[in-house]
Length: 125
Image 1: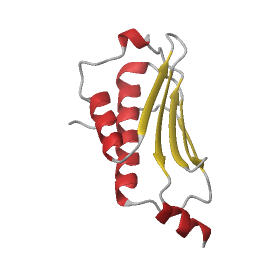
Image 2: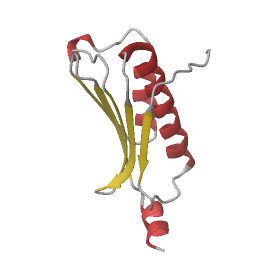
Image 3: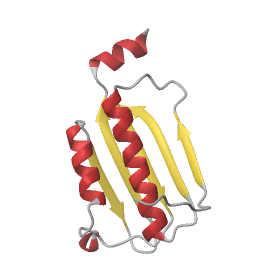
Image 4: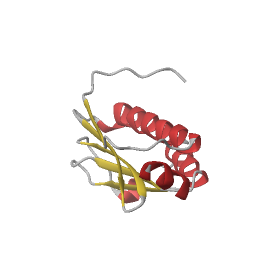
């Protein structure tokens, strides 16, 4: 797959107290972000992207939002393997994927993963 380069500004925010995640979370979070940014550059016609990585209510949250053209849920792209692959990858890691989009108002992609007891124990130390 060819790499995609773009001058698209991305604002990234992450909690300063994030614990060490298991490899499956690290790899999945990376791939979700990679696929989402690739889709935004290719399809969204966005001028800005916001990425937030945080922990809230015992969930690891990755939220990616753009100000692009958006789409109707009825027109959710289903002919490519990108979103299907994301959903499968997130499900295998024990997480959930939500996509909200409105035409002319951008898209918000949110992936959530349960904070395991192992991570909570390390975080408390």
